Length: 221
Picture 1 (cartoon, one colour):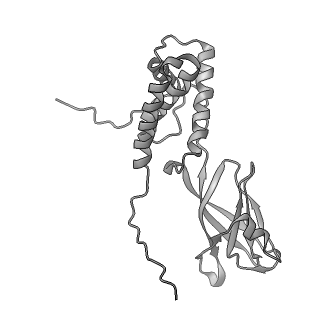
Picture 2 (cartoon, rainbow, N blue to C red):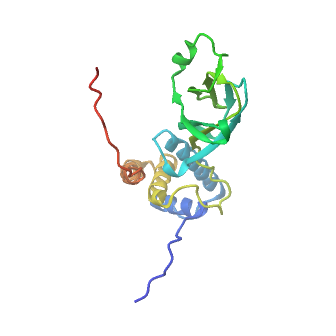
């Protein structure tokens, strides 16, 4: 007996929609149902951004800052900033130095936001166009290096595949079936929601960093 020797299985958007409708007991979808399902799929992607980290959407980005800069705008598809460093080119050696994230109120209470030195703190303003505010303002050219969470890409054309890691394909399908059932098969909504939540929990438990972590108690002085 032979195997396929392939590990490339994926679902195009139209196949994903077809599978979800079949779980709702519906076959032979029309044009409006396809459009409705694609809209539900995009809403599902947005909901996943609120459910926690999706590791495949974490990527490193950089931003060059010059003297006097204490505010930058990030790409509009940035959900959040996870961690960051300041890359200092002084003395011809690139050195990455930790920069601490602070809250809005902490940044607001800084008396002089224009003082210049190597940035040591940053505040992320999570608006439609995300911004980062530095303190102190840069006293020379640096590079802001950060890991960000980006939005999951829209479904787009029906022939596309989804911007989702293969481990999440089962819960993506069950999630879309649940969303579709709200409109077309309410009698199946309860069962499909249970399946979706179980599938998502299983995938989310696997979608994590497995590096070792050491916790050291703070004993004070």
